[in-house]
Image (tube, rainbow over all chains, first blue to last red; front, side, top):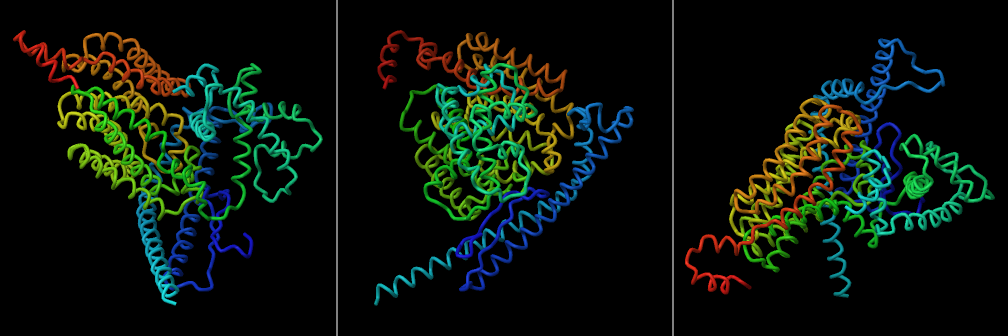
Length: 147
Length: 435
């Protein structure tokens, strides 16, 4: 993002986590409340990135292993005559999807709780910051009108 | 509906998420009757845009499926580009060799490609006022909201009372606002999950086009006036139902999606409540007719959703969503078929409750039998093509069923006649009742 910009910038989805990274703008006159908000958002971003990158990597890996083991059981190779990667159809993959979902259920429950907590905290902080900024602006206006 | 008809007739077999994406893309550009001509024109203008875009240096290293197209020389004529696109697009959708289809696909690819390129850039997180209507429309899932308002209007129209235009408009507006609020909160709750699923990764909160605070404020500013409008402008019962539905959708259905497959049943109730709200808005009471209409919509949700979810199993599994199609595939198909058949039963009950005449079960039988047949095929074959057929059928089945129901509505004047044995009062009753 350009140096003169006074806003946050959001980028394309990350390759591993599919989440979009945000570069936060640090204002020179950042109040303690605003700093709390920014740090909370940065921490949340890091947590989410860690979780989803690891989770998606595990998914891809286990999917590969599943396909490999199923193909071996059927007596086929990973690549067919044309050199294309062999895949299983959706019905065969269904067992894997069901298995993966149940294996990761507890992990998701934990993540859900954390995500909801973080989401509410950050949004509430945003509300507080917005209110503080509005009051500051009103006070500034009153001062100017008074002058 | 028109859009679906066009797609069906050309036999474009898009996977559901692409279909939805295309819907969104097309809708963003205001679909018209001359869909193909429109796309042809768009295709040319998008190409002109792309030709100038290629002059920019490639700043991203993320491989795009259309990379080879970007590396073509400037001097290459537009005509030559048509051919490279079709084979690239081939693996994404099974197209026939018809030129018309290829053109449409290329034209469909062009806007998708332009959007994909835009997606790879860093964007400033600044809210622009002229983008706001589009962003809020997507946040509130405006098309789904429109469908919900339609079902509520159907409920209102089927109620056996004189038609009151003000009440009708207030009820529709209130329901629409409530639906906007519920949808916005739903998206607010699901940002990281939406980012990871193909169908939902272009939502406004995912893309950072709007802040979560603004989304919540928007939801509140829709929900509160919406429910107030329903409670004060229509009647408290409708307002209560609206508030309950928002609660059910945001606080029950949305979290339950990640906890248990029972979420589908809760979601079906959420879909069934709007017509009930329409009915109570008109009559002020919850009678059998309201419950029947709710029942019809409740049953419809199952073939609709189960068929849709069949093609999304990978995304649901990775995203951690507990859906029948992933964990209990047999149950998924059984339930879909069961409820298709239930629709036949419910249509037969309608005349018994004096809501419609006996022509309704007769006329609706063909479409109900057809969707049941597709439900049976889905149950037996359990593959992508049968699930898609069932899903697309459900999209036109519901509007048609409601339309037929309305045309077969038992006029409340007839009911007055039936209950009025004294011939002398007959004329007077009519005078009083007619607006």
